[in-house]
Length: 147
Length: 216
Image (tube, rainbow over all chains, first blue to last red; front, side, top):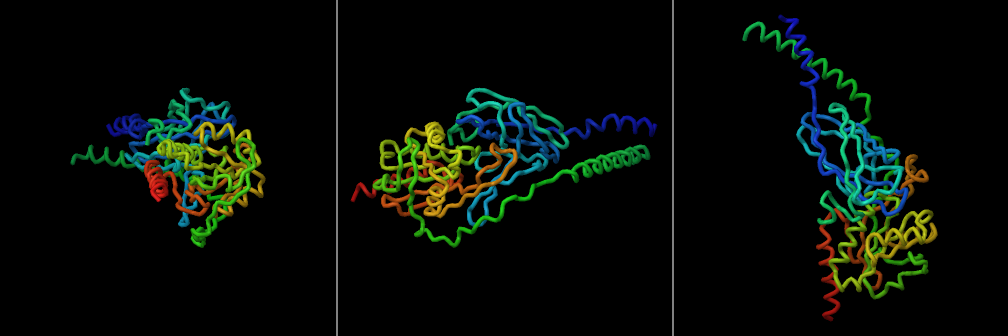
């Protein structure tokens, strides 16, 4: 009996430990000039404590996560974040002027109206692929330029 | 509680403890934050507003040599950035474009200036293509490294090269994200950051100044 319960639990473990991350409001800004790094933004919400540990895309050489840290004198500096903590049930939003994904070495210009895949790697939830729409150069959020 | 339930709980606890240990071990291998590779920024608190002046000798995006005198008699909205900047520059320039649109016909009284801090790459044709994407009125300014450094010094703004092996040409530019509102005589009026207020608030402040002057 004990063995049976043990086996059932082992079988159930991958499901019990399964974490789900919801990705919403993904968007990127169109490029103006060729070969310039692109920027992408999105909102992440995990049902358990998780971490975003990597991002890749077939349309750029490398994707890095950056935040702007402002010191007491009001001078902002970009710092690279290797892993983004996602506390359970807490929405974490990447937004212009604060936190953003930089797409270095784009294979071509990000053209408004197109989409591209972004592959998000989470410590617990594993790999999630999202389709990112490219909005205009003046876009400030997922709904476009309206503020 | 039956013994079977107790046993089940114990097994479950053991399994979760094991799973947690594995996760912890995996987590310990990953870095949370790469240390800031840049030295500490100079403190701006030692700078008085009265010292900030619009004084420069640069080249605009049409190739014309300009100084602050070319914009005398107009308010100036001035932002320092660079065209390889993926986030804060397009965000701020789009915001400045919104302010200009909100000014309507009174936008004539404002010179919107985008000064590059990366003149080696942001040449006249690059600036021309870049500024036209944001607003037909936006004026791009570039120059020699020394001219740009002088302009930044007169505005008491800060920028520096940040080595980045994955970036094009191996570097990005770190810079302050302020928009300066300068008076008709080139003196300092106000400073804004895109994140602090909607463009309507900045447009209203500029319109108030313009109307005050019209009423005199």
